[in-house]
Each structure stands twice: as structure tokens, then as C-alpha cells.
Length: 134
Length: 134
Image (cartoon, rainbow over all chains, first blue to last red; front, top):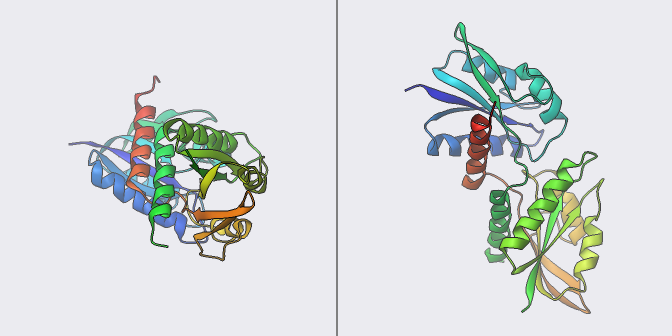
């Protein structure tokens, strides 16, 4: 079965927490969604870089590549830097990915943004903190 | 009925997207969870500041204040700056909030962090982008 590639893009950080967040989230996605081949990639300070990971996907058996930024909201990385790495114009969300001698569709998803699931996650974090042993 | 105060802390940004994210998420929480009185507050570049919002909560009819940072992961704001504003030692998650002439419990929740709900949100964003009209 041919799968979709999912490149989970992280900001990167000198501290370990952003990398851990991206890697664990990639593992959570892979576990629940075998239809995606999930690989992380970082904009700065951590490896693999986004470019490293794009190179890895070139030889994978995938029918499409979807790039999902694990960022809270739009900013320079989302609007300019990531599209540049993907060969997309500013504001573009669809292109092609040179793959294994041919081309497959490339789709660029949005950042987290306002979503009821995010509100649920904030309430979950609140309640975990309230109910933790003091 | 006495409610809990929920201070949703945002990073703030010169662009409008972070403020919009925090305000819409606060509205989502308020809509689904009337047991919380939800107010946003920003670390920098936007208003109200965290300090402004703490002042507002002083007169509210609340039995507890929970402070929830809408940040992806731990960093200097989470580990040092927000605790300093709350009168907590580094690493502390429980304190008191001077309120209406008395004191109520204050609880400091963690940032988003790795969570299966976050993985679900990333897959939702991927699928919305894949299924959007080209």
C-alpha cells in the first residue's frame, strides 16, 4: 500500500523541549495513523533539518507529501521560510515534490491556529494541574 | 456559583495571529466550560498584559486561579518569566493569589507539550489541507 508522507516541521530550540515535542508528536501520529509515513524536520538549531527530511522522503514509497508545521500561529517561518524550502510562492499551499525520478503532489498545511481541539487541550492541562498532588 | 478563574497566557507578537489565537481559544474555552471565568493575558507586544489580567481577577467572584500558558513547550517564559509574575519559585506550580482582601489558591499549568490530542490536531490540519479545493 502506498502511503502519504507527513513532514512535521518544528521550530527547533537550544533547549531540548521543542525537539522532544516534535519527536513525540510524530510518534503519536505514526502510532495512530499508519496511512502516514511521518518524519520530523527542524527550521533551526536541531536536526534533521527540513531539507534533510525532504531528501529522505525522495526515496520513500509515498503517493503525496503533506507538510504540517507544528507552530502555534502564522509568522515569518510559516509565511515565508517554509514555503521557500518547499518551492512554493508566499501564500501557496499546493505544489509538486520531485520524487524518485518523477513528481508527486505536495500539500502545505496550516499551523495549529484557533481550534476547539486546542481549547480542549488547554482545559485538560488546567485540570491536570488542579488535580495533581500538591 | 463561584467559578475558577482561568488566565490564558499568550506570547504576544507584532503580527496579529498570536493575539487572535489566544483570544479565540479563550472564547472557545468560555463557551464550552462555564465553570471557568476565562481571561487572556500577554507576555509582550499585546495587551492586556499578564499583570493587567491578574489585576482584573482580583475583584472577580472566583474560588481559585489557574494560569494556563498557550505555549508549545517549556522555555524561558514558562520556566522563569511567568513564575516570576505569579510570585512562584522556578519550578513551582502552586501558590496563592491575593484576592478581594483574602487569598485563594493559584495553580500554574504546563504548556501544550506532547499529547495525543495535539497529534489529532496535526492530522486534522493535514487532512483539511489535503481535502481543500486546490
